Image (cartoon, rainbow, N blue to C red):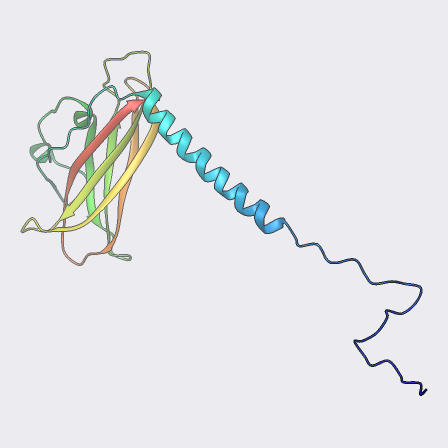
Length: 181
């Protein structure tokens, strides 16, 4: 009989060490994925709970208000201010409406005053604003929010659009949602 050299990859493993144990698949990806999914579910549950438990102290008012035209000095003049409104919409006033000369983004500065009849409860606000041109065509929109505004307290906020606009705009409040904090 002839003696043959074992070919690479064939035959018995070398004596003494044995074959290395099979490599375990890492579970890091699975753990990270499930953690992210759990975090998303938790955020959704918290948001739903805030809206369900907090309950709105007023229904959102979805009728557009009269436009506040772009002021030349950065603030509305007394003749341009809209009439006093009731409900959450009456809590929000546009104090400035302009297009940024550098970014060309429209922005509306807002003054939010909690006039809620619930004296012991602070309120959260979500305000939606649209930016229209002189013909009334909607050019952009923006949303802003402020939280924990105590009764009688004021809060300043800015609704910043992200579309480039090259003309003068008029800002309109399209929706105000107020709910207890």
